[in-house]
Length: 403
Image 1: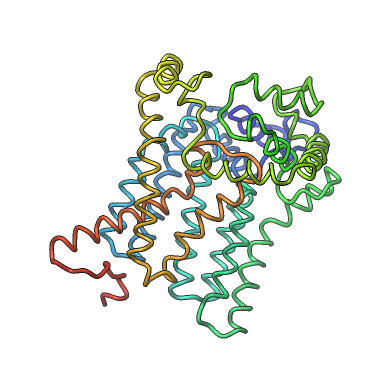
Image 2: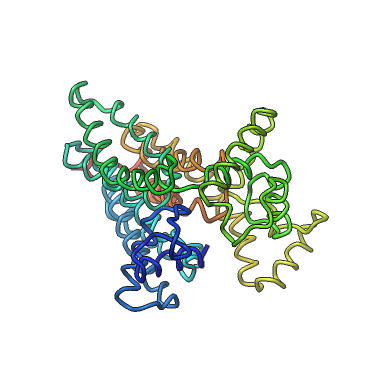
């Protein structure tokens, strides 16, 4: 994917078109990250090795947004500790050197989360317009968040405002988001003669997601990925990302839907297994072909080094399960504030629901919403610390409740 984003961005600078080959229009990915990258290249020149510095700026923006989320919900102490945890969490560092959209998407989703929290606490049309802008930019970065954008409409109806006010908020939110997204949808329809809201890839996702061998779960061996495309009858591929071409993706969509309709129960089962893979990960780096954990760790160490292999093992067996368990317990402890905390629940659920019908990649796809779990976990730890210190049995209050 690094080469894909780099090529799209540099072609935007040199030929001023969203294209891979310099001639034919592309819709392989959302346009926002390549556009931001093109602006960066237009300033510094074609220096892919400098892209990590841009990603660090995105990371700092994400940290600031999460600080605002934690501070708004629980006060500056929770905000500061969560921001520090997000900044120091190693998984974010591992993606900064790559030319991929995770750093930008994490920033946009964090901004979107903060806007949602603000709308929940003190709704106004201006804030819902801000919410729509954050949603639209996130969709243009990665269209899988469309599901989350629809989920958040439900938050408007849960509010305590009267019906006409709720309808006005929904219109402002939807219209602001649509103003950003629809021009790109129209461009795709005119140039590619297909209705592609943001980017192609649905066919790729449906075909891979209905594959019983790979289960649509990354990472996987190159041989297994090649077998997926061979079984679809689209090999040899003319270039690395040809499966995302609009015509090929449409063919894969038809084939995928046919396979799903032939075994819908099996597809539902595959989708449910991807929920685990989305958060915890598959067994690619954990075990070898015979299912042996120790030998699998040795193989991973030989391939990626003992530091990366050890962290990968700890992340899958300890860190991610720990965050999930602590966050769920925090939800229970702070259950009286469920309405205020709904954004922290809906963002992880919405992004998961957007990915698991198609394909998932362990550790990578959950990064934008992992801070939601971190905020909940830190809030619980601070609550327990305060309980032990002052002997209180009530959850820590929000800044507004303390005033």
